[in-house]
Image 1: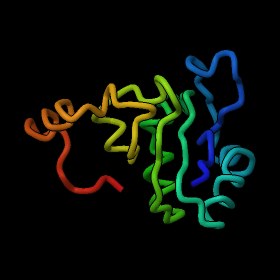
Image 2 (image 1 turned 90 degrees about the horizontal axis):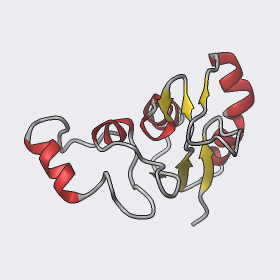
Image 3 (image 1 turned 90 degrees about the vertical axis):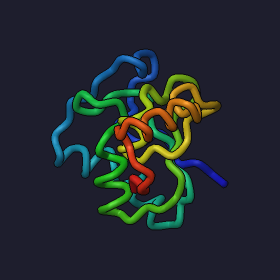
Image 4 (image 1 turned 45 degrees about the vertical axis):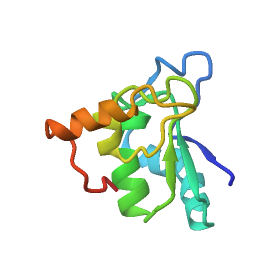
Length: 128
């Protein structure tokens, strides 16, 4: 299946691991999100997050996934991290709605998820 990427505000290639895009709601919705919304409306099955931060939070653990993509737009497909180092946490990424860490799990290792479940940092309910 095709993967729509890079959600969202990915605009600087050389500093993509470090850039923090500070953006207001109007600019976000008018400039950076319409093409993602169109892809979701057209039936996209997978969306890849970007490496950068948006308003201080990495895209792989940002409310952009849960609040806009999932709740507002009704996206029920897979959300995956950008390739190496696109996921930087276990708990925050799971809570944000990131489904898959690519290309393999460093933070999404089964023992890390089981430990977070055991101590109550996440639950088995779906975070979508």
